[in-house]
Amino acid sequence: MTVQLSLLDPVPLSAGQTPRDALQGALDLARAAERYGYGRVWYAEHHLPGASACPAPAVLVSAVAAQTTRLRVGAGGVALRHHAPWHVAETFTTLDSLYPGRIDLGVAGGVGADEATVARLGGDGTPLPERLQALQRALHNLGSGVQTWLLGSSARSAAQAARLGWHYGSGNVLGSPEPLADYRAGHSGARHPQPRVALAVAVVCADTTAEALHLAGSHRAYLAGQGLAPGGQPVPPPSAQAALPDVLGAYPRLVVGDPGTVRAALTALARRYSADELLVLTITHCPAARRRSYELVAQAFAAQPVSLSRPQPAPAPQPGGYA
Picture 1 (cartoon, rainbow, N blue to C red):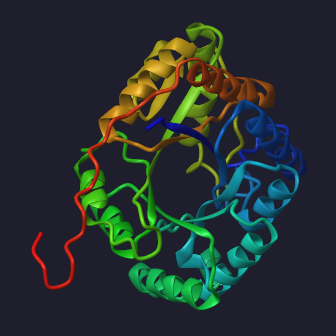
Picture 2: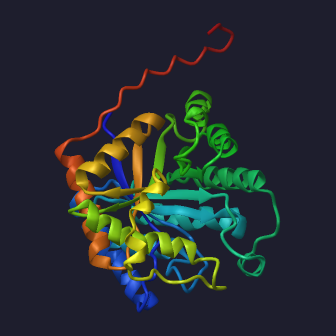
């Protein structure tokens, strides 16, 4: 099995950009990702108007799918606590009808917004497991072929994905791989016959490690600044202080370096977690540096694909028989 590269785009706003700039940049990046060989691109739902230009990922999914031909496109993910499950199912079923075989519905359990925003969006306090079951029923009733993913970083969310028979996107790159092994073993096949794991990893890659360290300062400052303003803060330009090598102390939550360094780190993570694919998330102040980072990672993996060996699952016991 060869590990697939995919792209996770929160559509960050850089200092000095307008939302229109950031959204146009997302379209440009998606077209580039298709050329680079990425398998899919996902858009995260964020309600921080000062930090991200993507509060409605389904709209961007439609625009990107219309401007690409091979790339799978989806939400990574819809914050299901904010929305009526039937409406989410109808939206993504419609997208799948327009672009058959290319649409992913990734659902996130995190809130991702303040209580006032959740209320405006229609959140009613229904527990997430109930919302997931309602979404599962809606997709079944609509006959939807959309690919479904549950996104999380805990044993609980992995177990929920297994019960639903969904694919699982994990961001828990510092924890034990055991929940992912349990997810595979317990996957019900209710919606998708085979389990699939995508591991989300933040990456900053440049031609040299020194340049990557410098660029990564913007990523670190961007994340640190989101709690400092009610609507979030844009990606700042890198500074001399932000270029300090201690950014590597965040590894492996943030993988930084030249192509060889990044490929080695991502390979180790893919093998540790037995991931089917890697969801690469890159945030830099400069859009061109961001595209270049994705390009270098794709080139590194194209030159030397990462293969994993995984034991074949035991056949399911037949009714009335014995395993």
